[in-house]
Length: 341
Image (cartoon, rainbow, N blue to C red; front, top):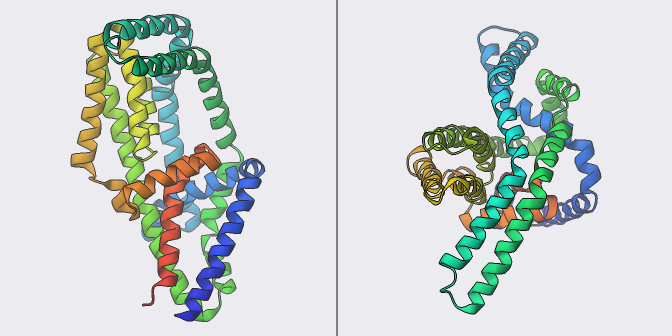
Protein backbone atom coordinates (compact mmCIF):
# COMPACT_ATOMS: atom_id res chain seq x y z
CA UNK A 1 0.00 0.00 0.00
CA UNK A 2 2.88 2.38 0.88
CA UNK A 3 4.51 1.78 -2.50
CA UNK A 4 1.26 2.61 -4.23
CA UNK A 5 0.94 5.88 -2.29
CA UNK A 6 4.48 6.93 -3.25
CA UNK A 7 3.80 5.95 -6.86
CA UNK A 8 0.56 7.95 -6.77
CA UNK A 9 2.39 11.01 -5.40
CA UNK A 10 4.92 10.91 -8.24
CA UNK A 11 2.09 10.37 -10.72
CA UNK A 12 0.18 13.42 -9.44
CA UNK A 13 3.31 15.60 -9.53
CA UNK A 14 4.06 14.41 -13.06
CA UNK A 15 0.47 15.02 -14.17
CA UNK A 16 0.54 18.57 -12.75
CA UNK A 17 3.84 19.28 -14.50
CA UNK A 18 2.52 17.88 -17.76
CA UNK A 19 -0.68 19.92 -17.46
CA UNK A 20 1.35 23.10 -16.84
CA UNK A 21 3.51 22.37 -19.88
CA UNK A 22 0.41 21.82 -22.04
CA UNK A 23 -1.22 25.05 -20.85
CA UNK A 24 1.91 27.15 -21.47
CA UNK A 25 2.54 25.70 -24.94
CA UNK A 26 -1.01 24.79 -25.99
CA UNK A 27 -1.09 26.68 -29.30
CA UNK A 28 2.10 25.06 -30.60
CA UNK A 29 1.19 21.63 -29.23
CA UNK A 30 -2.27 21.81 -30.79
CA UNK A 31 -0.88 22.69 -34.22
CA UNK A 32 1.66 19.86 -34.08
CA UNK A 33 -0.45 17.10 -32.55
CA UNK A 34 -3.87 17.80 -34.10
CA UNK A 35 -3.43 15.49 -37.13
CA UNK A 36 -1.98 12.74 -34.91
CA UNK A 37 -4.79 13.05 -32.38
CA UNK A 38 -7.47 13.03 -35.11
CA UNK A 39 -5.78 10.00 -36.70
CA UNK A 40 -5.61 8.18 -33.35
CA UNK A 41 -9.29 8.91 -32.71
CA UNK A 42 -10.30 7.66 -36.17
CA UNK A 43 -8.13 4.56 -35.79
CA UNK A 44 -9.72 3.89 -32.39
CA UNK A 45 -13.21 4.15 -33.90
CA UNK A 46 -12.37 2.02 -36.94
CA UNK A 47 -10.44 -0.69 -35.10
CA UNK A 48 -13.57 -2.76 -34.21
CA UNK A 49 -14.46 -2.90 -37.93
CA UNK A 50 -10.93 -4.00 -38.80
CA UNK A 51 -11.16 -6.71 -36.13
CA UNK A 52 -14.48 -7.84 -37.58
CA UNK A 53 -13.02 -8.38 -41.05
CA UNK A 54 -9.97 -10.04 -39.49
CA UNK A 55 -12.29 -12.52 -37.77
CA UNK A 56 -13.82 -13.33 -41.18
CA UNK A 57 -10.46 -14.45 -42.54
CA UNK A 58 -9.23 -11.25 -44.20
CA UNK A 59 -5.65 -10.11 -43.64
CA UNK A 60 -5.04 -6.96 -41.61
CA UNK A 61 -3.98 -5.04 -44.73
CA UNK A 62 -7.08 -6.06 -46.69
CA UNK A 63 -9.33 -5.47 -43.68
CA UNK A 64 -8.04 -1.89 -43.39
CA UNK A 65 -8.60 -1.30 -47.10
CA UNK A 66 -12.18 -2.59 -46.85
CA UNK A 67 -12.86 -0.31 -43.87
CA UNK A 68 -11.34 2.66 -45.72
CA UNK A 69 -13.55 1.84 -48.71
CA UNK A 70 -16.67 1.83 -46.51
CA UNK A 71 -15.65 5.16 -44.95
CA UNK A 72 -14.99 6.62 -48.42
CA UNK A 73 -18.47 5.55 -49.60
CA UNK A 74 -20.04 7.17 -46.53
CA UNK A 75 -18.10 10.38 -47.19
CA UNK A 76 -19.16 10.34 -50.87
CA UNK A 77 -22.80 9.88 -49.87
CA UNK A 78 -22.50 12.76 -47.42
CA UNK A 79 -20.75 14.94 -50.04
CA UNK A 80 -23.33 14.34 -52.77
CA UNK A 81 -26.56 14.32 -50.78
CA UNK A 82 -26.07 15.99 -47.37
CA UNK A 83 -23.26 18.54 -47.80
CA UNK A 84 -24.94 20.49 -50.66
CA UNK A 85 -28.07 20.99 -48.54
CA UNK A 86 -25.96 22.16 -45.61
CA UNK A 87 -23.86 24.56 -47.71
CA UNK A 88 -27.00 25.96 -49.40
CA UNK A 89 -28.59 26.78 -46.03
CA UNK A 90 -25.36 28.34 -44.74
CA UNK A 91 -25.02 30.55 -47.83
CA UNK A 92 -28.64 31.70 -47.62
CA UNK A 93 -28.34 32.37 -43.89
CA UNK A 94 -25.14 34.42 -44.28
CA UNK A 95 -26.79 36.55 -46.97
CA UNK A 96 -29.75 37.21 -44.67
CA UNK A 97 -27.66 38.24 -41.65
CA UNK A 98 -28.26 42.03 -42.08
CA UNK A 99 -32.03 41.48 -42.29
CA UNK A 100 -32.06 39.13 -39.30
CA UNK A 101 -29.98 41.58 -37.26
CA UNK A 102 -32.55 44.31 -37.87
CA UNK A 103 -35.45 41.98 -37.08
CA UNK A 104 -33.77 40.72 -33.91
CA UNK A 105 -33.29 44.28 -32.72
CA UNK A 106 -37.02 44.96 -33.22
CA UNK A 107 -37.94 41.82 -31.28
CA UNK A 108 -35.61 42.71 -28.40
CA UNK A 109 -37.11 46.22 -28.18
CA UNK A 110 -40.62 44.75 -28.28
CA UNK A 111 -39.79 42.29 -25.51
CA UNK A 112 -38.29 45.04 -23.42
CA UNK A 113 -41.31 47.35 -23.53
CA UNK A 114 -44.09 44.73 -23.58
CA UNK A 115 -42.82 42.11 -21.16
CA UNK A 116 -39.96 43.55 -19.08
CA UNK A 117 -41.43 46.98 -18.28
CA UNK A 118 -43.19 45.62 -15.18
CA UNK A 119 -40.00 44.35 -13.61
CA UNK A 120 -38.12 46.32 -10.89
CA UNK A 121 -35.70 48.97 -12.27
CA UNK A 122 -32.64 46.93 -11.23
CA UNK A 123 -33.81 43.91 -13.25
CA UNK A 124 -34.69 46.13 -16.20
CA UNK A 125 -31.20 47.65 -16.25
CA UNK A 126 -29.56 44.22 -16.17
CA UNK A 127 -31.83 42.88 -18.93
CA UNK A 128 -31.33 45.99 -21.05
CA UNK A 129 -27.56 45.68 -20.79
CA UNK A 130 -27.56 41.99 -21.69
CA UNK A 131 -30.10 42.30 -24.50
CA UNK A 132 -27.99 45.03 -26.11
CA UNK A 133 -24.91 42.85 -25.72
CA UNK A 134 -26.76 39.93 -27.33
CA UNK A 135 -27.84 42.10 -30.24
CA UNK A 136 -24.31 43.44 -30.80
CA UNK A 137 -22.86 39.95 -30.56
CA UNK A 138 -25.33 38.61 -33.13
CA UNK A 139 -24.76 41.54 -35.46
CA UNK A 140 -20.98 41.53 -35.43
CA UNK A 141 -19.92 37.91 -34.94
CA UNK A 142 -22.26 35.56 -36.76
CA UNK A 143 -20.28 35.86 -39.97
CA UNK A 144 -17.03 35.46 -38.01
CA UNK A 145 -18.34 32.28 -36.37
CA UNK A 146 -18.95 30.64 -39.74
CA UNK A 147 -15.53 31.69 -41.05
CA UNK A 148 -13.84 30.43 -37.89
CA UNK A 149 -15.71 27.13 -38.08
CA UNK A 150 -14.56 26.57 -41.64
CA UNK A 151 -10.98 27.45 -40.67
CA UNK A 152 -11.03 25.02 -37.72
CA UNK A 153 -12.39 22.20 -39.87
CA UNK A 154 -9.76 22.93 -42.52
CA UNK A 155 -6.97 22.72 -39.92
CA UNK A 156 -8.25 19.51 -38.29
CA UNK A 157 -9.22 17.48 -41.31
CA UNK A 158 -6.04 17.10 -43.34
CA UNK A 159 -7.10 14.94 -46.27
CA UNK A 160 -3.55 13.76 -46.95
CA UNK A 161 -1.83 13.29 -43.60
CA UNK A 162 -4.68 11.94 -41.45
CA UNK A 163 -5.54 8.86 -43.58
CA UNK A 164 -1.87 7.92 -43.86
CA UNK A 165 -1.29 8.15 -40.09
CA UNK A 166 -4.58 6.32 -39.45
CA UNK A 167 -3.56 3.51 -41.81
CA UNK A 168 -0.26 2.92 -40.02
CA UNK A 169 -1.86 3.12 -36.58
CA UNK A 170 -4.27 0.36 -37.61
CA UNK A 171 -1.71 -1.70 -39.51
CA UNK A 172 1.03 -1.59 -36.86
CA UNK A 173 -1.21 -1.71 -33.77
CA UNK A 174 0.41 -4.94 -32.60
CA UNK A 175 3.88 -3.42 -33.06
CA UNK A 176 2.96 -0.47 -30.85
CA UNK A 177 1.48 -2.81 -28.23
CA UNK A 178 4.68 -4.88 -28.16
CA UNK A 179 6.81 -1.74 -27.80
CA UNK A 180 4.68 -0.57 -24.87
CA UNK A 181 4.86 -4.04 -23.32
CA UNK A 182 8.65 -4.02 -23.68
CA UNK A 183 8.88 -0.64 -21.93
CA UNK A 184 6.75 -1.75 -18.94
CA UNK A 185 8.52 -3.90 -16.29
CA UNK A 186 7.24 -7.49 -16.40
CA UNK A 187 5.89 -7.41 -12.84
CA UNK A 188 3.54 -4.56 -13.83
CA UNK A 189 2.29 -6.13 -17.08
CA UNK A 190 -0.93 -7.59 -15.72
CA UNK A 191 -1.99 -4.51 -13.74
CA UNK A 192 -0.99 -2.12 -16.55
CA UNK A 193 -2.95 -3.90 -19.28
CA UNK A 194 -5.90 -4.41 -16.93
CA UNK A 195 -5.88 -0.65 -16.44
CA UNK A 196 -5.79 -0.12 -20.22
CA UNK A 197 -8.83 -2.39 -20.60
CA UNK A 198 -10.76 -0.32 -18.07
CA UNK A 199 -9.82 2.89 -19.85
CA UNK A 200 -10.78 1.37 -23.20
CA UNK A 201 -14.16 0.34 -21.79
CA UNK A 202 -14.87 3.88 -20.57
CA UNK A 203 -13.73 5.52 -23.81
CA UNK A 204 -15.64 3.14 -26.07
CA UNK A 205 -18.88 3.60 -24.08
CA UNK A 206 -18.46 7.37 -24.00
CA UNK A 207 -17.61 7.78 -27.69
CA UNK A 208 -20.37 5.42 -28.87
CA UNK A 209 -22.89 7.19 -26.67
CA UNK A 210 -21.88 10.60 -28.02
CA UNK A 211 -22.04 9.48 -31.65
CA UNK A 212 -25.44 7.77 -31.34
CA UNK A 213 -26.97 10.62 -29.35
CA UNK A 214 -25.62 13.31 -31.68
CA UNK A 215 -27.04 11.54 -34.73
CA UNK A 216 -30.40 11.11 -32.98
CA UNK A 217 -30.55 14.79 -31.95
CA UNK A 218 -29.48 16.04 -35.41
CA UNK A 219 -32.07 13.96 -37.27
CA UNK A 220 -35.06 14.54 -35.04
CA UNK A 221 -34.34 18.23 -34.43
CA UNK A 222 -34.19 18.76 -38.20
CA UNK A 223 -37.42 16.81 -38.74
CA UNK A 224 -39.26 18.55 -35.90
CA UNK A 225 -38.24 22.05 -37.00
CA UNK A 226 -39.11 21.23 -40.61
CA UNK A 227 -42.63 20.16 -39.57
CA UNK A 228 -43.28 23.57 -37.97
CA UNK A 229 -41.61 25.26 -40.97
CA UNK A 230 -38.66 26.88 -39.17
CA UNK A 231 -36.10 28.15 -41.67
CA UNK A 232 -32.69 26.47 -41.85
CA UNK A 233 -34.08 23.42 -40.02
CA UNK A 234 -31.39 21.15 -41.46
CA UNK A 235 -28.56 23.53 -40.52
CA UNK A 236 -29.94 23.98 -36.99
CA UNK A 237 -30.33 20.20 -36.62
CA UNK A 238 -26.70 19.58 -37.62
CA UNK A 239 -25.57 22.30 -35.20
CA UNK A 240 -27.69 20.73 -32.43
CA UNK A 241 -26.08 17.35 -33.09
CA UNK A 242 -22.58 18.83 -32.91
CA UNK A 243 -23.32 20.81 -29.74
CA UNK A 244 -24.83 17.70 -28.17
CA UNK A 245 -21.29 16.31 -27.92
CA UNK A 246 -20.74 18.78 -25.06
CA UNK A 247 -22.47 17.25 -22.00
CA UNK A 248 -25.19 19.26 -20.23
CA UNK A 249 -24.11 22.63 -21.69
CA UNK A 250 -24.32 21.71 -25.40
CA UNK A 251 -28.02 20.75 -25.45
CA UNK A 252 -28.90 24.07 -23.78
CA UNK A 253 -26.84 26.06 -26.30
CA UNK A 254 -28.46 24.18 -29.21
CA UNK A 255 -31.88 25.58 -28.27
CA UNK A 256 -30.83 29.21 -28.76
CA UNK A 257 -30.43 29.30 -32.60
CA UNK A 258 -33.66 27.34 -33.12
CA UNK A 259 -35.67 29.72 -30.94
CA UNK A 260 -34.05 32.85 -32.40
CA UNK A 261 -34.72 31.81 -36.00
CA UNK A 262 -38.28 30.87 -35.03
CA UNK A 263 -38.83 34.24 -33.33
CA UNK A 264 -37.76 36.03 -36.50
CA UNK A 265 -40.93 34.64 -38.13
CA UNK A 266 -43.31 34.95 -35.20
CA UNK A 267 -43.53 34.65 -31.43
CA UNK A 268 -45.58 31.46 -31.73
CA UNK A 269 -43.02 29.83 -34.03
CA UNK A 270 -40.26 30.62 -31.56
CA UNK A 271 -42.35 28.98 -28.85
CA UNK A 272 -42.95 25.87 -30.98
CA UNK A 273 -39.25 25.69 -31.86
CA UNK A 274 -38.48 25.71 -28.12
CA UNK A 275 -40.98 22.89 -27.56
CA UNK A 276 -39.50 20.80 -30.39
CA UNK A 277 -35.95 21.12 -28.99
CA UNK A 278 -37.10 20.33 -25.47
CA UNK A 279 -39.13 17.34 -26.70
CA UNK A 280 -36.15 15.88 -28.58
CA UNK A 281 -33.94 16.31 -25.53
CA UNK A 282 -36.53 14.77 -23.22
CA UNK A 283 -36.93 11.75 -25.49
CA UNK A 284 -33.15 11.41 -25.63
CA UNK A 285 -32.78 11.64 -21.85
CA UNK A 286 -35.79 9.52 -20.90
CA UNK A 287 -35.88 6.76 -23.51
CA UNK A 288 -32.59 6.56 -25.39
CA UNK A 289 -29.87 6.59 -22.75
CA UNK A 290 -30.84 7.91 -19.32
CA UNK A 291 -27.94 9.69 -17.59
CA UNK A 292 -25.72 8.44 -20.39
CA UNK A 293 -22.76 10.70 -19.70
CA UNK A 294 -22.48 10.31 -15.94
CA UNK A 295 -23.18 6.57 -16.18
CA UNK A 296 -20.75 5.87 -19.03
CA UNK A 297 -17.80 7.74 -17.52
CA UNK A 298 -18.66 7.22 -13.85
CA UNK A 299 -18.57 10.92 -12.95
CA UNK A 300 -21.03 12.99 -10.95
CA UNK A 301 -22.81 15.69 -13.02
CA UNK A 302 -21.15 18.46 -10.96
CA UNK A 303 -17.73 16.97 -11.76
CA UNK A 304 -18.66 16.84 -15.44
CA UNK A 305 -19.76 20.50 -15.49
CA UNK A 306 -16.63 21.63 -13.62
CA UNK A 307 -14.46 19.64 -16.07
CA UNK A 308 -16.18 21.33 -19.02
CA UNK A 309 -15.74 24.84 -17.61
CA UNK A 310 -12.08 24.25 -16.72
CA UNK A 311 -11.37 22.51 -20.03
CA UNK A 312 -12.89 25.33 -22.09
CA UNK A 313 -11.05 28.00 -20.11
CA UNK A 314 -7.67 26.28 -20.51
CA UNK A 315 -7.88 24.66 -23.94
CA UNK A 316 -10.91 26.13 -25.74
CA UNK A 317 -12.90 23.83 -28.03
CA UNK A 318 -10.51 20.91 -27.50
CA UNK A 319 -11.00 21.30 -23.75
CA UNK A 320 -14.78 21.08 -24.11
CA UNK A 321 -14.51 17.91 -26.17
CA UNK A 322 -11.83 16.11 -24.19
CA UNK A 323 -12.17 17.27 -20.58
CA UNK A 324 -14.82 14.71 -19.54
CA UNK A 325 -13.09 11.55 -20.87
CA UNK A 326 -9.69 12.80 -19.64
CA UNK A 327 -11.03 13.36 -16.10
CA UNK A 328 -12.74 9.95 -16.22
CA UNK A 329 -9.48 8.28 -17.26
CA UNK A 330 -7.64 10.13 -14.48
CA UNK A 331 -10.19 8.85 -11.98
CA UNK A 332 -9.67 5.25 -13.16
CA UNK A 333 -5.87 5.57 -12.91
CA UNK A 334 -5.93 7.10 -9.42
CA UNK A 335 -8.48 4.55 -8.20
CA UNK A 336 -6.46 1.65 -9.62
CA UNK A 337 -3.24 2.81 -7.98
CA UNK A 338 -4.57 4.15 -4.68
CA UNK A 339 -7.11 1.49 -3.72
CA UNK A 340 -5.56 -1.74 -2.53
CA UNK A 341 -7.08 -4.81 -4.21
